[in-house]
Length: 150
Image (tube, rainbow, N blue to C red; front, side, top):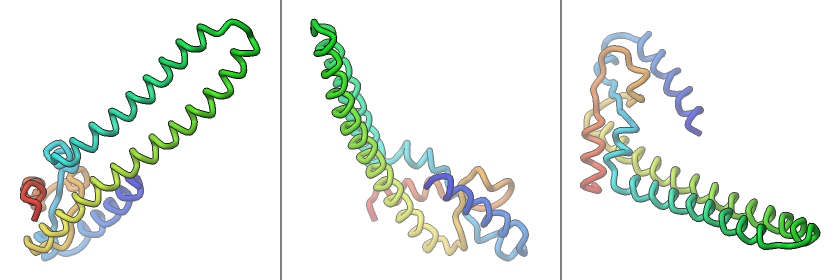
């Protein structure tokens, strides 16, 4: 999803660069990483994802201890097969959770950015990395919008 967003942004940036100067004043840009770093919801979501990742690591540590206590090769083999299935299920759940949280953060930031776009009467807002010269930095406006929740 991020790569697709970057490609679309790059194409739009090129088109905006080629178009007349009238539209150049209606372009904003945003530092998405800075917005994330200053958005409490994003920080909380990242912490939740990290905690789930730590739970997954702890699961492996616990299983390794159990494995070492097994005595026969057959018990170890059965344990490995069972643990592999459990781990794959937990890993899949973790990845689903992580993607859900990332999407929630992205959607909230995008909604605030759309509000700033309308309020500032801009034609488009791009990622700051595709703007070489010009445009209006709306990063702080988006952060402010997210903090106030409006």
